[in-house]
Length: 516
Ligand SMILES: Cc1cc2nc3c(=O)[nH]c(=O)nc-3n(C[C@H](O)[C@H](O)[C@H](O)COP(=O)(O)OP(=O)(O)OC[C@H]3O[C@@H](n4cnc5c(N)ncnc54)[C@H](O)[C@@H]3O)c2cc1C
Image (tube, rainbow, N blue to C red; front, side):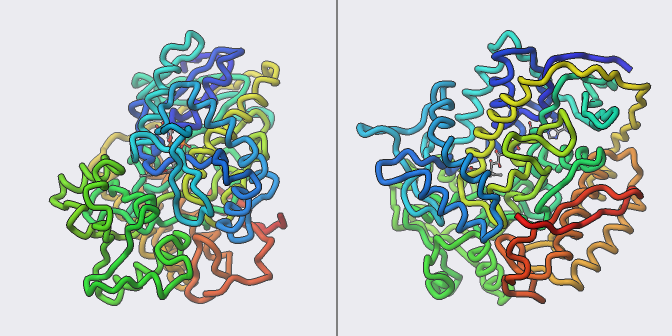
């Protein structure tokens, strides 16, 4: 098997991967792998913006309060402190790397989103923030003499020898290759594609989290999945997101009878936490109602404030300045992932995880809107700084054989569709013991059908199991995790977070609670 040695290996080229690469490249050679094209992840899809306490009426402590409140008691406080204190520097760094944040005479224009107590969301061209950040980072990385960007390169497994991660096996240019490095930074994003309805990019299938789990790394908080209330209700994969910022500007939800139901559901009305809004929409839909976003109050200003959303709606035959926009909840973000400390270190030496693949604990049970781009930037820089302190490993890989990869996409799609529907029905917005147990049985049957050579589908099954097992384990409702059979949050679970590790037998998963 061919070997390629680099100083630092980054798997994933979203905001987290590229931020890590640019930081690492100050001192060493960096190779970045990306599964398909370089901006195929969720970062380029982000609309609303990036949160940072840079406004005159804002402060890191206010941002901290909002983040902790959204996290419903399960945030790792030290991690949140790191996030909010470094927020301003992180957005200044993105600005210095070429992100053209929208600004006016008084500096950056700041938007407001649900559960933020002040205006603190930096954005670009209204609603094209992720694409603009990615353009800037990619250009910078492409020009950097010490960064090598490899698209169409799928990482398959971590190479762990004597307990340390020293590389990754991957398919590069159609061949099996071993990439060896002194540190591996996993920046493979979340796993939204395990669900039937999702806003996530097709590349976001949880591979990195599955690779880490296989290698014995600890995963955390996998039961906490965020369902965004307002995806455009036109069946597509991925579904198009109608950013929360639209509600931040005054739009509100109505059902097909014109009932603005959110005012009865929560004191913050349409800007209530995402899980509350998603469940409210879900219950309207279960009662046979259709749900819409009424943004007509914005009139013609809609097109200038939200040009990307406007264009997309127009293509679908909807004019948001006069028509209601049909919406439905969709899987959006996973709060859980590979456990890391505040320096991005996983439980395996030399393996770091950053961005949505990681669980730093900043989101707790529910992510505050626009905190994930910030997390991707702040923690990728910290992880990279930490990785720069490592010396080269003295261990060499033993003989390594690569799994065979089947390429029958038609067959794989059938199994993936079965999985995605199963997850939506059994581990979606509303869960209960019976449904989760049935879901796990179906998952086991599916796993028996899918040959191990279908690597991506197998990774999706692995991750789905971690979500369902931990959802079954948490017998309460909190943040993004709602159990119909335990509809309240319980003091007993208030300091307990799930921690999972691969068991001795491949299929068994250890779920352990521990206190934060
Ligand atoms: C529609 C949408 C809108 C959003 N809006 C916002 C917003 O306004 N503000 C905000 O803060 N957050 C937002 N989010 C969330 C945010 O975009 C993501 O959490 C964040 O971009 C994740 O960044 P990342 O770098 O961790 O991963 P991604 O950007 O998802 O990148 C993952 C990378 O990993 C690569 N990869 C995956 N598997 C492999 C493999 N096996 N081998 C090699 N490479 C692999 C992919 O190719 C990709 O390059 C939004 C998400 C969506 C879907």
